[in-house]
Length: 91
Image (tube, rainbow, N blue to C red):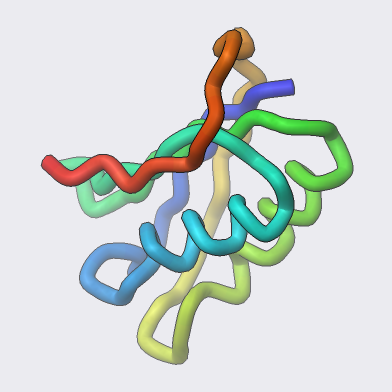
């Protein structure tokens, strides 16, 4: 399963992308995370359903007290074959 997540709140400039990457790797997920110009963070995550559900749950905790997640929009998307890692996209 692969999902596109759009995270709203105070999620830029607080270490959120690196937190999401570490969490994804711990849960065995692949994909990527990036900052968007509208101050949201966008994640594409791929793996089994239960680890993805856990990933979304723990994203709400955030990396530290400076981060705040107000909403996570979840949308299922097409899987990517042979993806091996979870990357932070730097723009």
